[in-house]
Length: 155
Image (cartoon, rainbow, N blue to C red; front, side, top):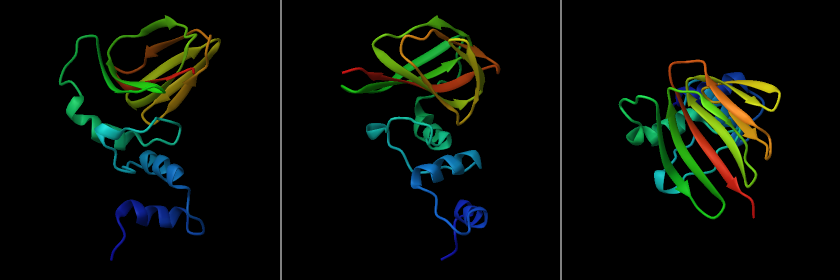
């Protein structure tokens, strides 16, 4: 059975080792391939290993055709975390969280996130944890940014 294009490419790049499945998904995303299949009724938490193309595929039916400023839709909520699909054409003003740890997973577009005194430049596939009690904001560097905003509740 012939190898799928992404598996063939990975076998050429990493001939002597098999990456951890989570790292493999991240590498595939950076190379332009989807990773594991996701399901809207059982979404995992996002993290630095997530594949943005897999997320875009599963969220495609929820993405708005047009927006003027910002679109937000909750896609997961349980006792541990919430996830919002956010499509924005406007900057997000400074805010601070004291009860929930926030993270951003960029699906499309580019932005600069200021966390405290540090600036992080993010684009599709990038993930950023925001520490508790630290002011942060988001400035768009592209016309529009699509992201997952995830909040982990402190227990």
